[in-house]
Image (cartoon, rainbow, N blue to C red):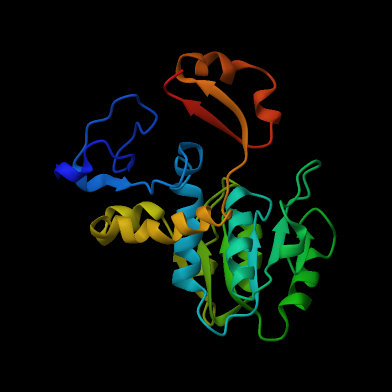
Length: 250
């Protein structure tokens, strides 16, 4: 380990157990945290912010206008909207219409479509326009993902990065002639592939966004590591809005 790294705050990646009080791993997996970012911001810099930052950089090329995001009321859906509006693209959001669930900032969306309402597919088709969807970010899968895929232009791309429905995309999404390109995105592939050599550079735009007050993760409750089991068994945990921040020192 370089002497300059001693005493530095880092994000310990590469293996499970980031919540542990002690973790043993190679120095190359330690991402230095900027001194001006507090712990309760830096600890959320990995999965949720890095996933949308990487997907937007990789797939939202100049000229892209029609973008659809499924599960728009998810944390990553909100982050995608932040990043896309910064590029001058107002995305179309697709949600289930679950009571009590809404997007974090409605003004960032061109429109929000509820899949529990009749005619949602026709409305999405009209909003996408005759050319179709340029880029679709889908973490739902199943028939909703398939319907979004069918409305994506032949030279567009459907970025599939999750499976909230528990059902995979139908085979026709991959085999139908004239369909869009389907990209299966896993952040792990980026981080554990060539990205491992460039981890500080990979995280630099995330840290900058956090510094500017963007890509923040809402915290519903702070709990010490020793009290975590009891907290998770509490009946109200599943109804809170936001993440649980585990404080190992408590």
